[in-house]
Structure formats: C-alpha cells, structure tokens
Length: 334
Ligand code: ATP
Ligand code: MG
Image (cartoon, rainbow, N blue to C red):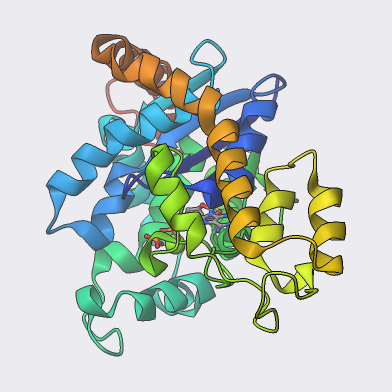
C-alpha cells in the first residue's frame, strides 16, 4: 500500500475552503492509502512563536474538525508534529542539502512573508531562520514517513519541488534512502469567499467555519455578495456574478438548476435565495457537526486517537531514521 502524507497547521478552525479544497478528498483517499495526517504545530509556531496558546488550542480543534469530517482513526494516523523528534533531527541533516538563496527564491515563502508583515516586518527584513527553513522541515515531515504521495493545493507545489530536490540530493550522496514523493494536485479549484474574494481565508475574515452554529451561518450568508446590477427583488440577474449561487453549487444543492433559472428570470429575490442557502449549508454541515460533537463530548477518546496516531507515526519515523543514520555513517553503537 502506498503512503500519503497530508495535514494542516493548527492556527484555527477549518472552514468550507479547507473542506472542499482538501479534507473531503482525504476522506476518500484514506480507503486506498496508508494515510498520515499531520497536525503541524511546529510549523504553526514559525509565524506564531509568540502565541503558543493559540497553537495549542488549535491542535485540539483541528483534530475535532478532522474527525467530524470523517477522517477515520482506524484508517488514518492523525499525529502531532512536535511529538516526532525524528523530524527535527532530519531537518538538521537536510539543512546541509539546500542553499540559503534557494530558500529565498521559493515563491510561496516570498508570498507568505509579505502577508505576515506584523511578524516579519514591512518588507520581510525580520525573517527568521525558522520561517525561511520551514520547507526543509516539511521535507523532513514527508521523508520521516517515507511518503509516496503528497496531496496539495497549488500554493504547496514549490515546497514539494524543494522536498524532491533535497531527497534526490540525499539519495545521491548517502545512497538510496527515500522515495521521491509525487505531488497530487487538488482537482478542486480554490474556494472563493462569500465576499467575492478569490479565496476563503481566515485572514480575510470571510469564512464559514465547519463548526459555525446555525445563527452564525445565517448571519454570514446574509452578507454574501450578489449581482450588483440586480436592484429590485424581481430584476433578472446573472447568477455567475453571485456568490450565493456559487455556494449553492459548491455544496451541491439538489435544486441548483431551479436557483439558476429563477434568478435569471427575476423570479427569485436575493434575501429568499440567501435564506435558502443558509438552510442548505446548515443541513450540509449537520452530519459533520454531529460527529464533531460526539468527539467534543469525549475528550479522552480524542486524546487516545491522537496518542495512537502519533505512536504509529513515531514507529515509522524510527524505522526510517535507522536507515538514515546507517547510510550517513552515524550508527555509532549499532
Ligand atoms: P490563513 O489566513 O491563516 O493563511 P487560511 O484560511 O488561508 O488561513 P491555511 O491554513 O493557510 O488557511 O490553509 C491551509 C491549506 O488549506 C492551503 O494550503 C490550501 O491547500 C487549503 N485551503 C485553504 N483555504 C482554501 C480555499 N479557500 N480553497 C481551497 N483550499 C484552501
Ligand atoms: Mg493561508
């Protein structure tokens, strides 16, 4: 069975963008692959090092979100990055195999650096060693479970390329040790925000979280951007300019064709359409929230799942590191 590694940084709760962008697909993949799901707390600290409480709290929320979405702990190993010290060790060895200019050239790192001005300064002059190097530790995450496949969004492709370069170099110098992982590009496009922004994103404050209650969802949906040319409730409109229609489609509302037709003919007011969408999203999230609540009420069960997932990953990482140390001539007392 081939191995897959995926995961998220624990920096908040998951939203519909995460669900349709990645988590839904992971739930399918876990049936066919040996799946490792990484809660990347060490990586979350690279730009949240002064806010460890937020990271700690988010680890638990992320685990609940995963379980709610149907990540099955019997099939997938959900694990906490900081509890796998082998990742830190491997990061050190890998750091010799990548140049500092190469890390600076990574387009995703550049982009994120400028998004995090409050942490790293106006033009990124306060960049830390840890942040610049996080693609190296990501290579170590992937290598520690010797993953074959890494499902990613487009923004992650430069990191996977960096991982592949590092692992090829390692294999060349120290002998065949690692699989060279293949990225599996997400087939779902980037999910837009209710505000019409290109991306639903925490920092843009335009998210519907998987754990939002019915009132919150309804309030958020009421603010969604609609066709600006539609003034009166019975004006015909263009659904392709409307985020409400976009979301009807996204959550696969079975009445989506009716929504489209009525909107085009001016037979559907936006307020009515939004209320219908809110109800559909609430309905869509219901099974996810029920499962999430089950685990929320059983913290000891969640802890057990995380412990077991972490233990399984640690075993795998130890096995990989044994080979690494041998190939690097570091197996002193073996
Ligand atoms: P932040 O605003 O803190 O950056 P975010 O909401 O953008 O948070 P991230 O934690 O950056 O979420 O997202 C992690 C991964 O989840 C991304 O690499 C991407 O693959 C996926 N993802 C996030 N938002 C979306 C979205 N709107 N559409 C599709 N995929 C998404
Ligand atoms: Mg982001």
